Length: 213
Image (cartoon, rainbow, N blue to C red):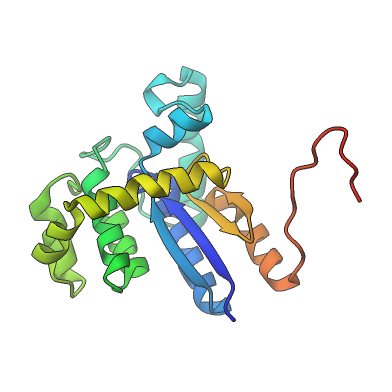
């Protein structure tokens, strides 16, 4: 039976963009059963004690830009540090990913194309026409999927993904959850693959005063 990973992410996250290609390759290598679960990051932060970028200390904002440059250089990806149409409301774009997942489409492939649209091509993912065009370029029925993305049932899944993320101790994007163990950030992909290869038992937080045995 294939190993399952819950993959929490958002199209608003540059870190999801940086890690997606490598995680996609890893999923293929190991035959993983990946459940793609978009979440609205502002709500994740609100539930788990994080802060949206604009409210973080300037030192943290500056360090983020340096880290993005480091990873852009290391991975050789054409990331724009401050894309023309960012920040944006990712709700519709994230819910389109959910619609594709629910319809059995190539969610991982679509996310790759859509994340490159914002972080490489500086396209507007808050625009319905842009999302429809990107879906069509990926061989999908853009109008039908956009209608599904705007449906109440998809909104409910988006909300449920948030609840699932908080319950799983996810607090940012991307996060990969294997057997209940959270690997947060694209820079943890090496550790995730080591866990897959070794087949070890998942690590759990050690609570003070508990018996480690």
